[in-house]
Image 1 (cartoon, helix red, strand yellow):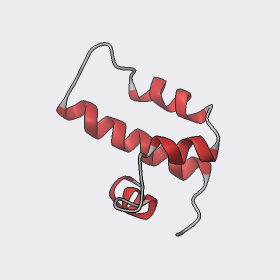
Image 2: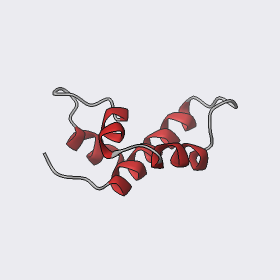
Image 3: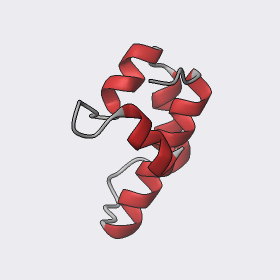
Image 4: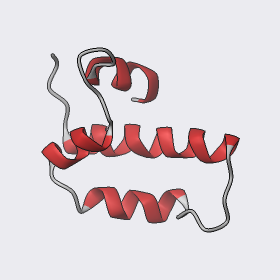
Length: 67
């Protein structure tokens, strides 16, 4: 598994968020900017957990799709 920086993980999670919100918009959802601020407060370990990756859908897969 590659090593990813906190900034790379935050960028990928925000990209995923924008993608998900585009398809299923809810006015109560945080904006991408608000979501980024939330993600920037997390540790690298917490960010990895936010990706919901596992052996079937790896972090490398997630980063390839959203990073």
